[in-house]
Length: 432
Ligand code: EPZ
Image (cartoon, rainbow, N blue to C red):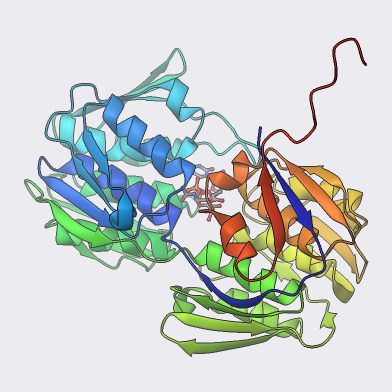
């Protein structure tokens, strides 16, 4: 099981490039189910979840080509033959976003059989709102043996109001609505840029969508969709993670191939701590932290508020800020898995319900720590970049799910980071 070995103390200086957004690529790959034609996606991140989605689509009968070489960030998907409209538990248990095939499968094939995703490290993460919307559109839903089965000769347009804002719920039902009979009005939708990215692809495929990116989306169902080519938008969470990396190390980092328009809340919060954040162009941001950072409270909200996917990374920064920072997590019920590991590195953090109180600045000390989920892992990488000494981060496969070659990218701007196989030599036989 690979580990990172990170020696702290180097300010990050130079230019670092952001990859395509994992959370755009996943629904866009699922959207290929909606047509018999080829869908080509570019600027795809080379991360584990994309590979998992490829396996999932192939298990259903799709042809998925992930191109190597300089075009290695491109995939062409053809779902002409969907021999088995089923997402098996073996795959779904490794990536709950597999539930994104539910809506497109029912819309295209009239039925879907998808393993219940089960919870994950950050919370229960049910998909009841996905199912409620499909039922409202005429699908018959049954659940047995850990699987959901949804059937409908043809989904019918409906008026859907989400009980709470859900990103993949909005995406799943948007993909169900584009082939439904009649018009669908969706209210209280997620406004995340990943929804807009998906809608751009669907529109290129011939869908009729208005309002993507706002809380109200109207869809006029069509009979069929054609293939299309689409470039995945930059990953705003990877970009935000790099901005924090530049600030926490007191560096001078230029983050390229990003979209500053998607990072307002993150940039404002970093400025509030005293970091200098300048937008240098339509796809470039510069972050510097020439002086001490100061505490600033943060409360996670749906987009365009401060993203929950940046909470763990911000908490690492807060340990280096002078004063008391209150970090409130409003989206998930268990997204403080990084706290205990940061405390093991010397951070002063107390959790009370959904709020963590971070007292800084504290000199973190290197330690052997354990990654638990994607963004908690990123938090530990950031902490290790400023800790005194050499930290060892275990279970870095969590990072591989959503960060492409991050050790190479960080080393390229001065981080002392190495990826190692199992670095503890096997104990000689007979020794405890
Ligand atoms: C998406 O997850 C992202 N994943 C998550 O990113 C992100 O943290 C989350 O949105 C919030 O922004 C992908 O896009 C693949 P939700 P999603 O449905 O859609 C509750 C990462 O790190 N809820 O918006 O699963 C749910 O429990 C990942 O890249 C229901 O109760 O999140 C949560 O409390 C982690 N019933 C809240 O809504 C439902 O049917 C928001 O969840 C659906 C959701």
